[in-house]
Length: 250
Image (cartoon, rainbow, N blue to C red; front, side):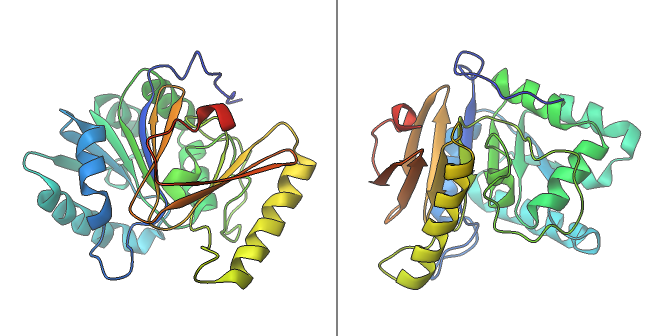
């Protein structure tokens, strides 16, 4: 069983949890280029984990992501986990300088990782400092559990427990009240129900322009125009893009 790391175990975490891959008026990952470079630093051999996509879409997705990373910077060598046989997957995870886990269906992503016994291995490497970048579903599994995923449960999973690189539950694509008050109120109600039932877990909802930059137990919100909505027991916080550490609020 995967356990939730505590703050001491997360001291070496170097992660970026992106809410949305694409924002209106921008190209894919355009809003995140600088933060991706900052997170990967000198890491160049990047393992793409695109299991959140349907199997028939994974080849084309991998091709597109290799093209995207060639625009972000020179020298990235991206290889995809879906191209590996089951028996090769652990070696592929161990050989990576960094992880990029893309979006899609979170249940499908987590099932594929558990089927290959990789959740604990990825967690171990990320806790040891291997850079981890997730987008949407890939960010969702960066939290303690996938308790606030927006996805339909396409498949059954052995547990909702995920990587725990963030000491909270991550909710990507959180509506912005300035643009959609109805959807905002609905999401806030759903998250409120979750934390009322799970009083030991905080939920952090991030609007589409937003990214959580995690350095050990310190958490920062990045992204122009981004907002994060934090629910912890009966407490509610809203944070806009800032260099303030959100960790104490989680």
